[in-house]
Image (cartoon, rainbow, N blue to C red):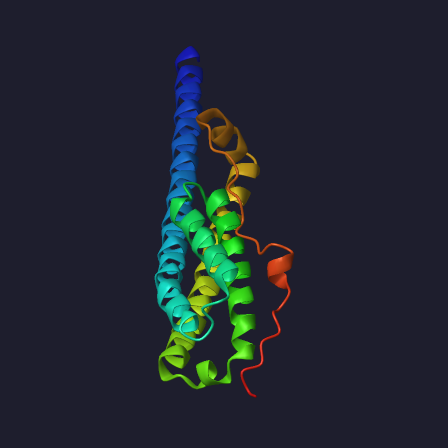
Length: 187
């Protein structure tokens, strides 16, 4: 009878160990997915950041006296380039978006700029970059949601706590970024 109990205990321990390893591997896979999605967000943020100097140069040709706006755009872009964590990048992205909105608002005063083919092309590229950012942000947030759920539900919450997994931040638009800037290029 003792041998059967010992075999039963070994089987239960083996099943628990297998379940623990399987759960841990699932959490790791979700963690890697979050990191991959964040990499894509960084790629599209960098693509937009790479467009900014060309856009600024186009506007500078028409609005050279708007020095403060150009400095704000450059400073925000530098913060985004120097961001080391998702949280820092999210803050810097909000600053870039705000600075770009202010830059685009001054374009209203320069009808010739709005007709400039280089400017129009850059605006199209910027719009495409913004769309890609939105898509990649959504994919990142989906991966974060799956990961955060995985580390909070039982029994994986026990494994996650023992192995040091912590919740990841969602990429949320800042309050002011949720307000659509009013820009009318149709004049």
